[in-house]
Image: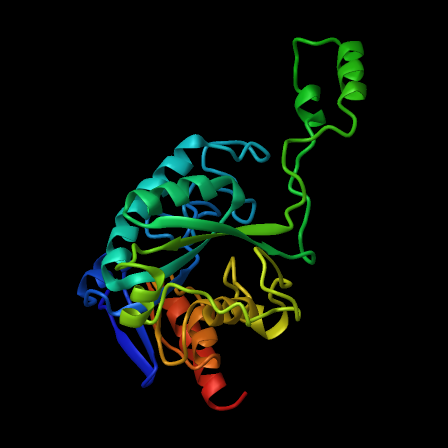
Length: 300
């Protein structure tokens, strides 16, 4: 499939392709911030992170080869760490000294993602929580149906175990937050010296979501309505991305998202007066991103 590059306007540069290849074409020290939501190798994604992988029950989040309710597979985390290490090495090259990388992650995989990013040369500076309350369903599964299938037990034994397991489910509480890893490219000199040279490396604590000093817990509800119409599996709210961009960059600086998805980072960059390079391997998502940006440009 040919790789396309689309400039919605002078500030937004959308590129179709695998970021592992596209990043190599970007110049060193050419972006001021990386803001992204990498894939987690779940939900029926194939090796190119497209929907449709065989052996995975679509929509359950189950890891291939494991029954529903048994999602944990340590190999998933190790693969993610290796994947992120190679990409983070390229991101460190294109990011200016002292620039920040913010990466969303499932809480149970955040440590692996952070290790991959850190081993590539970044400094892990903090961990944030995107807190939401709506549309968060309990993912734990009862084990009672497994007990019923244990043919080594008598009916009386099954009943006894079922009574003992009442209210017991797999260890998955109702999710209400997602991790955001905050990493920094090594600075040149002190914070002030780095700022004088590159205008990055310090945060603007005047920016706020709720009228108070910005904190590591950021409460923004999940996208609904128009923000979710495009059907992406894990869309992030533009309001949250805009807040993060304003915390870490100045107007007219350049944001990079190597996993653009349906374009929320590009929209947030446009809304806050920044430029953006967005890379997306799935053509359908790139078309959605272009459409969303066109609607914004038209004032809709």
